[in-house]
Image (cartoon, rainbow, N blue to C red):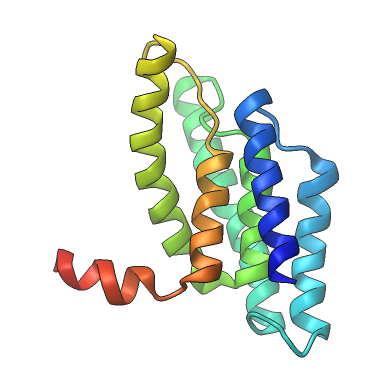
Length: 157
């Protein structure tokens, strides 16, 4: 099932990069498939409770962040497709993977965002897609779940 998830994430990254949209027709089924896969498969990636809570927490974290930003700036800071993508990653990988995913996506997003803005000649107020960075972070966490705790974190401390 990992290859299916990876292909879906690559597809979503490509679509978001090109269109600034993460289609509900892909993100919603990914959420439900992640919960079902972890609940009913012997090959599950996390416990069913962790998958359900991961979907809920992934959605709630970015939704709350966007809501706070919208109250301060009167505009969205992150798209709802990104919210649903993080919920899907939480459903597949569990709630405990969310901090690593957000850290990797944020670092990659800062680097990629600066490159995007310079390449496109935009200003800092211009939007750029965050979904590709969430997708990359999800793939990294899926394939190398101990990357942050064992390789990166000890070097930072």
